[in-house]
Length: 348
Image (cartoon, rainbow, N blue to C red; front, side, top):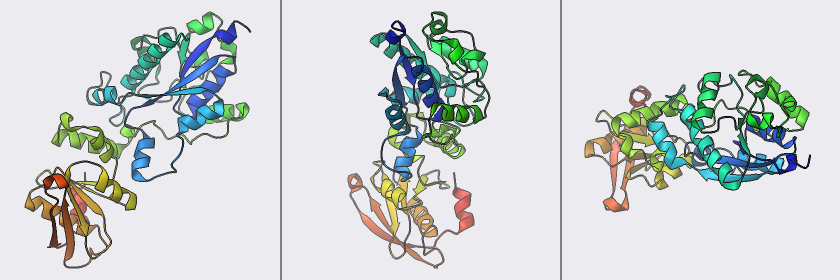
């Protein structure tokens, strides 16, 4: 036991059920664990914060680490992740999610952390066959090879279905106390959580970032087609996750807030453009990204009116406010609201 107490492992912790279980399983063998959590710029946590969903407080990873009693390192890889999203070597999943490339990036970071801090191996909560793109056997092998962790990457929840790793061969980890879970169901993990006394975990979401979301993926493809990869800055990444997105016949993008929190965000997000709000009726805040011609601004005003409580009126007044860098000019347009079918035809 004294020898095992000196073994140290690095675990990837999203805060979801699988990664939480993996940490607990490794801890149960008397191994010291430090957890790593990666910020990519595309997480549900950030989207929900922007959209005003959920409570402000610790993230799932922070709560899980505190419950498990392990140290947690937060690592920002958003700059490197952008290039993966645009040019994934191993392609996309069901949306714009570069899952295989993503795992390789994170595990390369984990390997570097392991080597720098003198730890012995890396482990994850991956389950064989759970995700069709990144967790089938060939993909698991590719990720292990390309991350530089051949033999030193343990997957505790599926280890009995995979080749023994160096930590198992050297007796750092007892293979008999690992698991052989596979497939897309979660019954085995839920039963294991109950067995291990883990009750506080988020419900499985089907993905760890919103690149898998079909609506977001559609908006991102549209953005790349019209604005180009060079315009994909952090502010635009978050903006794509907020509001309703419409394309004018000219190709100009218009974003319309759906509720108060999104309206506030559009007014303060820092993306240059023109802001529109209704004068006499409750309604949304609309952002015309990058500004626009007088004709495009009138289109945006009609869209804003169409989503306002005054949409049944023949004419609605809409205030147009340009950013300070453009003179801070305010004007009011009287426009005919666009009706529902017309709005749907413009939707991205």
